[in-house]
Length: 144
Image 1 (tube, rainbow, N blue to C red):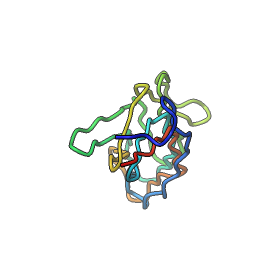
Image 2 (image 1 turned 120 degrees about the vertical axis):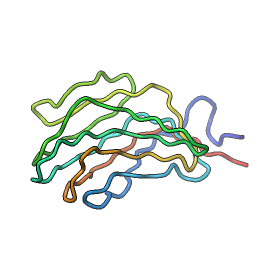
Image 3 (image 1 turned 60 degrees about the vertical axis):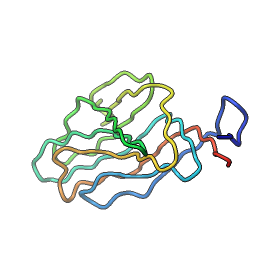
């Protein structure tokens, strides 16, 4: 495998996938011929008025199999808008007065082309909405 960029450092890229339909989790693929080092993932979960305790997790699924989930401890109730941030080296924090939750994942985590970045939301309701998704990566393009 040959990398298109200089050794040891990829190009910085912010990926903004389309918002999933209401009541659905996020799912996006690493593009063909790309290698991503995930720096952080941020999204907004706006919960509907339906009573339920939602718990959102970030999930990476590898091409050949294998899934890893990054859990956080915060439970989001009805009628709230909370921003979630997954970042390497970040200490888990529950929702602050500004409606933000911080979640940690390991530094140097790589995904290759067609790996999947997704959310898994426990007790998601039909009118709940995930939006404003920002995935910050270092990207290398694979040649050959």
